[in-house]
Length: 302
Image 1: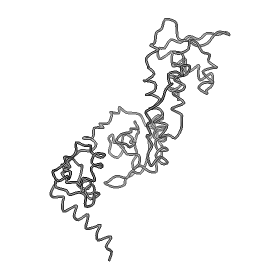
Image 2 (image 1 turned 45 degrees about the vertical axis):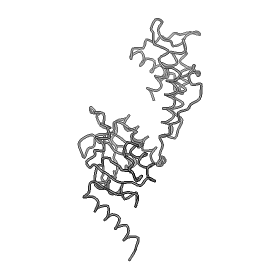
Image 3 (image 1 turned 120 degrees about the vertical axis):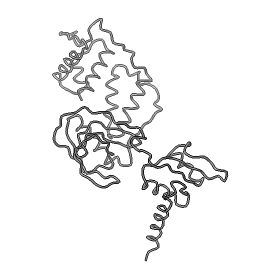
């Protein structure tokens, strides 16, 4: 990508006094003409680059123009590398790690040392998820609409969106875009999207950043209280944190949290089997009982 390459060129010039265009062309695996266009673009962006012809010529930053070469410390560079490697875990390639190597060209010492932060953003659905991420990313960069089938609790629907951002949040991938059906910006979960097809360019509009606060995306309309058996403490801690419950004198756990809707409450309580009892909202206790009886009848058979 052009931006990646331009950042790489600037990084090399910060670390080496002068380099040749053929060297940069070989380093970034592009033509010399492409490098010349990148240099012109950097100059237009306000970085004064000087090109000199001859055996000792090359490209350099104008003398007297100062850029802090110590802007990124070794720990900063290691943190960036960890982040870039985490993106490789999604795409299944090593392109971001290769980009980091190019950014640190001529200063390999910046990457020396052990890496103790390992981030893997891939999921159980990596085989199907990675192509979606690539397709949506390309559509965002090229300004192409994307059509798809979307599966949500309220049903299945056909959508066409103008994609603006890919977001990794709550251990899942989402795309933020303008939905033609809703005529508004919406957040779509990638694992619920199928049959993605790019098509039709769009003029980018002013796109606000999504409000990713849990209270906004998952509004708690019902306050739930439930008594949970102690063998499920690990699950409460994993799903809601240690502050979500108190230990009662008999050892059982009094759980309290907000839920979005009745369906999620009933399903969550029933998933514990006999290990949970819903206390509040009291009107949903019959719903849990009906859910359990439905399962019992199905397994009892005729």
